[in-house]
Picture (spheres, rainbow, N blue to C red):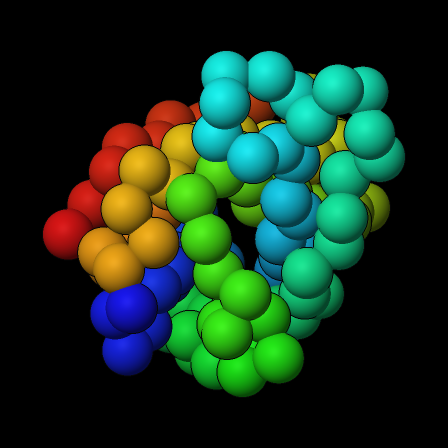
Length: 125
């Protein structure tokens, strides 16, 4: 397994700065078989906040208790965009990024670029 299997970085294009203090949760949705886990409730793996640079420390996103069980499957990062922008208006109350981990030994970087009215993501390096 990679030393840091999952990292994220959030940039706010409306301010041109990192999105510091945004709540981020990680859920496991399924086993990677192409299903959503058979309708099973998503399993919360971690709940944390971005730091001053808009990043989440890898050990907070995938804590050691989870890292040992990090495996191929479908995961969701949920970014609390509405709470981050409040009290200003925000079209999306949260941004869900659902992704597939095919190789549990690889590193996955999931950046999020956002504004109050849109967001974009990609698989980073």
